[in-house]
Every structure is written in structure tokens, then in C-alpha cells.
Image (cartoon, rainbow, N blue to C red):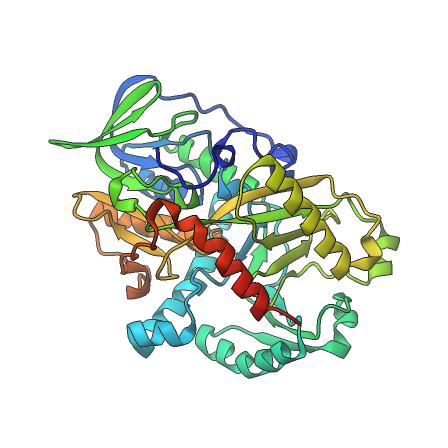
Length: 445
């Protein structure tokens, strides 16, 4: 396997201080693939994308097998901040309009909205308890000029998405329960909600198994070979032959599985701390009692939310190495940013810290479509840190492609465009320090 981060990023127990993992244990054992097996649809990756694809296929009566290096939700699907919200692309509005036209751009924005609705409907239909909260999300301006931009964009967002928006001026933040000297106002978009991502992904796995899906953990795919009637997938303890192949590994992909994936994705680290439960007095002292999902206007954004159990989750993009030493340095840095933004909580313990790999494409847009010229083989990846909604929705779209049917769901040209390759091949991670320095310059006060 040719992965571009250090081996530590892919070890089973690298995230032992993951709050979701520590408080939401596995509901079921997923045995490793053992010996030779056959299936109609083979899915690599048991996260939001792979499990939504599996569940969709199983509801259509298909024979489905999912292979994962460790188990459901081990990767980004069990490590993210739990923001089910609009998003999925990092390409600017101007770039999207230039490449896909005004109509294509608007269709993509409606896809973002459809992705949130898809997860919303799924949670209701499957009756999943995921500790849901927050009425949409709030973006907070970390500079006065960013608030000026939010004022200009408010009407555009309302028009493009057809959702309610609310501007919050700096003087009104405290009354909204968002008191911090860091921010100069905000914009609330009434679409989306927070959830426990591990409860969500395990709920998907449970429902998939009840529909007949076979899920094998501890089964990393180490090789894929085309055969006369499909594909042969090799893992350390077995092989799986399948007529159809679906790849759902996102930031945990490998450049040689298959070769078409080489340099078409770029993993980036996201880092999260979670506090102990805050007391009423501590919440009052900081003046942050809103349960809104929130993030700021930085390119290397901070994101945070006060969860229903009164723990504060705080995350940041950044980090270019996955060694234990690099993780400790990042933990210290994240904590220092937390203390700066929420100074009343400098004495509050943060016993949980972990990192995970989000995924970029060079196009800065998600992709759902064929794996090159391979027949009956599809991939879905690159949600740019918004995988709860977009990754789930794209998993469903990938399943419909694999079934060979025309979907009645929105599937815009934006996500059909095959991603270009990053420069520098296996050494493309060298782009990250330069990119982060540039973003830090753009984000300066």
C-alpha cells in the first residue's frame, strides 16, 4: 500500500483519546475476511460513504460485502466534529461558475442542501439516536472586514439555498450566548445540525447488517486485480471476488488501490479537543451557552460546539505530520487557541484529543463516478471536511451508479468531474506547509 502520511496515521489505536471512541463503544464485532468469498458488490471502507452505499444497495436486494482496515467508523467518520451542514467543496463561487456555469453552480448548491436533508430523513427513518442538537450553524467573523463580507453574503445565501439566515452584530453576540472578544459578529444559516458521528456510523452499520450486508473489520485491502467476471480483492487473511467494486476510503486511500487513485486526493489533518462537562457557573463566566454549531472565517478554520452534555468540542485544521511527537505539538497548539478564544475556561481540563484525515481533491470539489476505464467500478471521495452530509449523500449516489440506474436525486456536473492529479505525486504532502503558511498570512488579524 502506498499511503502518503506516516504509518502512525493508520494504526488501530492511534486515536485512543478520541472522545467518540471512548464514550461510544463498538456495538458489534466485525470479523476479518477469512478464506475465499464471493459477492455481487464489494465496498472498500466502512464509513459514512461506504455504509450508506451498502445500505442503499441492500434495500434493493443486492448481495453486499464491506471490507475495512479496522472497522466501522475507525477513520474520519468516527473522528470528525459531528457537523451535518452545508458544504463539501472548497472551490470558490467564481471558480464553480466559470467551470460549470450559473446553472451548474446553483445545482451544486442545492445538492449541498439535499445532502443535509438526506441525513435528516435517514436518521428519522432508521430511528437513530445521535445526540442531535443545533438549529443550523453559525459562522463567526474573526475580523471586522469578515463581518462586512458576511453582511454582503447573507442575501446571496438565502437566495441560493432557500434557507433562513440571521445576521448577528458584534453587540448582540453575548445575548445569543456567543460571548468571546475574538469575534466581530456572525451569520446563522438555518440548515444543518450537530450529532455524535460515531453513534451515526454505528447505527448505519447495525442497520446494514440487519439488511444482510456482511461487514469485515481488520481486513485492509492490499491488492485489487481485474478478473474476467469482475474484481478480486486481497486482504491478509482472505480474498473476495466481486462483480462490482465501490471505493469509499476518502482521506485514508492508497495511491495504488487502484493505480487510478494516484495523487488524485490529498489528506489533511483535522484536530479536536473535548472538555470535561462544564458547570453552569463556568458557562456563565464565559458567556457561551449557545448550542449552535459554529466555525470562524479563517481559511484554517476553528470549529466548535457546546454539546448537549455541556462538554465543549473545539477543532482546528492543520498539522503536516502524523508522528506522536507532532500530535503532542498540535495538541498544545489547539489548546492554546482554545484558551485564547475562551479565556474563562483556561482552567478547564480537556482530557480528549485526537486527529483524523479529511480529504481534498485538486479540483476542490467532491467526486462520485467511475474509476477510470474500469467497468462496474466507482469511487466517491473529497468532501473537504464536510463528510457527514456530503459523504453520506455521495455514498447513496455511488450505489445508484453501481446499480446502473438513473437517479432521481440531484447529481450535478460539479461532482461528476474526475479530479485532476496533484503535482509531486507521492511527495505532494510537501504542498501542505506552503499552503498553511499562505493561509495563515491570509488569516492574520
